[in-house]
Each structure stands twice: as C-alpha cells, then as structure tokens.
Amino acid sequence: MRVLLFGPLSDIAGWREQILEPASATLFALRERLAAMDAALGAALEGEGVQAAVDKALVRGDAALSPTSEVAFLPPMSGG
Amino acid sequence: MRLSPEPFEPGALLTDFCQDRAETGAVVSFTGLTRAEKGVVAALELDAYPGFTEAAILETVAAAAARFGLQDVLVVHRVGKVSPGEPIVFVATASAHRRAAFEGVDFLMDYLKSRAPFWKKSHEGGAARWIEPTLGDYEDAARWDAPKDAG
Image (cartoon, rainbow over all chains, first blue to last red; front, side, top):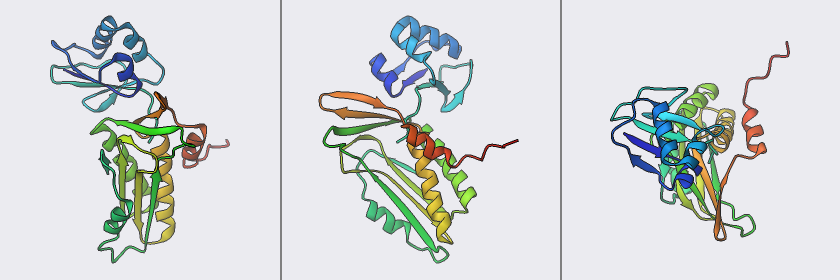
C-alpha cells in the first residue's frame, strides 16, 4: 500500500511517500503502525484538523484497506 | 483546471480563453502574484495532492458555474516553488453578462485562498514556515455562505 504525507506532516516524518508491505488491514491499524514507527508522526496524525483520504476520497473514522490502497494524510488546508 | 509546476503567462491564458466566444458577453480574469513582503519572502512553496486537489477545485468550479450561470471557467494554479513577482494563480470566467463573470471570479478566489487543498510554505531567509489562511481569508470566504436564519 502507498502512504502519502502532505504539508507539515512530511516535514515531521522526513518522508513524503512510502510503500508499506504488507498492507495494514484498516486505517486505524495503519495509524497505529505509523505511530509505532515514529511517535512524533503518530502524534501529528492525531492533530486537530488532520484528515485521511483513501484512494483520493476523504474518509471519517476507520476504513478497510487493501494492498493497492493509497492512503493520504492531509493536514489543515492552507489555500493557495 | 490545471496545476502548473512551471511559470505561466497570464496574458496568453486570457487570450486563449477569449477565443471563439460568439455567445459570451463578459470575460473576467484575476491573476495573483507572489508578494515579497518587503523582501522577507524568498519564495512560496505550494504542496498539492495531484488528482485530489484538482477534483476538489473542479467541484467548486462546478458549484460556481451553477450558482452564477457561468459559461466557462479556467483555473491555473502554480505548485512547487514560486518566486516573488511570479503569477501564482489565474482564474477566468465567461458569461453572457458581466455581473456573473465578476462574481464568479470573486467567489472562486475566496475559495482558493481559504479552503482549496494546498499546503503553503514561506521561505524566509534561511528558514521556512508553513502558512495558514488569515482571518481575513476566512471572512472573505464566508461572504458567500447562505445567511444565517434569524429564527
């Protein structure tokens, strides 16, 4: 599965895109996995206004993921 | 709608946009330039989510077209590093009469400055900081919300 970070999240993590194998089964499991890899990133992902998108659609709460899923974490949008 | 990693020429975009418009009475365009803020800003860096950002902007373009009765809309937005003085955003609208075209551009710019899926970093000297919309940006965008029901 492909994981994407945008804006300040990518600065905190030090990466912008990563392929994770094997894929996490759910969004919540992926969040736990990222937090275990990097506590600062885990805390930032729980920050106010951070949204998640699966295959370019915003999701609230948990979601099922597959090996082909693209998961993006989107901090509050700043406008252009 | 197009995200452009390269500089664009607003005059050329406007000329193209005005072609073949026998039924259009009004074209309004807006070009936003990157400000140096008295020499403080070396560059703005725009981060976007390809595919997602365009889709979100197109949704608002469709809403603007329906609301104001626009015939056509063009939005071009820079991504990546943009130097002071360079165009960062271009919006053009076409309509039968001028009011719709003016209001459509105004509406779309308020959306683009406050809610569009971009993340903006300001490079200042050796440092860089992420920028949030200003209170004024949010107030500008709120002008287009439905009035609150007094009841």
